[in-house]
Image 1: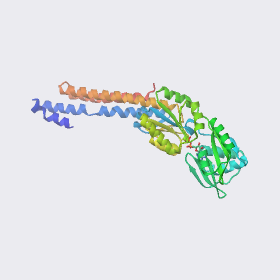
Image 2: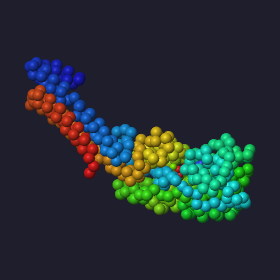
Image 3: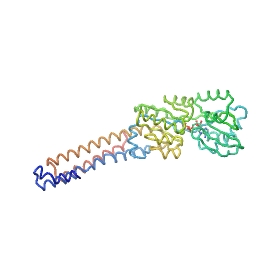
Length: 383
Ligand code: ADP
Ligand code: MG
């Protein structure tokens, strides 16, 4: 606007132009230099990308996310429910002195109030054995650690080894050995404590999501520099599962806030970091990550709300498509911006040397806007 006013007033004094030519060229300048094509360079492209993603079951919550997705250099995966199906099953029970049934009853008394997949598995196992139990009182979930409550006025605790052994004393070395062996096999060991001592352990096993290792191989092929697994589960179990998937860096025994720290560390090293998760315990890390990605089916409400991208059918192989889409959107936006700016420059210069009329200016201006918009629509198509 300011340049337009200057162009409409100065030339008669400075360059000796007559007034009608001066005003005419100032008007053409206002038309051709207005940045419509520049505006149209970005939004239609990103919207096309979002539409394309939606058709494949990838929901991007904003255009900015789509662009960021194209810049991702490192990806952190949650284990349970993300890389694994998240429907674990009880596979073995080892008790110290009491019967398996009593152990399951204690565990089920707390877990019947839990939404955690491990809790659901334990309750399922107790039901299959036809057991009956009374729900515990004051039951509290401790994200990434376990669950506590009261049964017959005594404290009960169910959760990972560190958590349970902090609250209950364990005098069974035998249990430790069982635990070690089970964890080596990729099983998650849940400890059950009641009235001050450890009663026994329950091993649960989860299956790796079909296609997960191919999805990870594909991501590496796309040049993602770092792929890590984050989990609240223990190191041995996590390591065993990571090995099957071709992930070499594992951070285990993490509380929700530790996951945030790991993501921050990765961001220092790789700038743009994506985090893929499903649970309440992943939500803080999803928020911290440059791009938070939630599993649509398995994901908890909090994870879905916090994430920037949702994978509708929990299909991990769509991550690679999302990254490709993000990269293509960056390329097209860049092409569009260069085209739009060059076109404006050509028209402005042509106008200044007197080469165009107002109709030509309008056609050039609108034409470039239309071309840039059509170019953005290319992202609707898959290669
Ligand atoms: P992940 O990070 O792999 O999704 P979580 O952070 O949800 O896993 O849980 C980490 C660990 O905490 C589990 O492996 C389990 O040992 C323990 N845990 C968490 N919640 C429960 C629960 N309700 N019952 C028993 N154990 C639990
Ligand atoms: Mg999880």
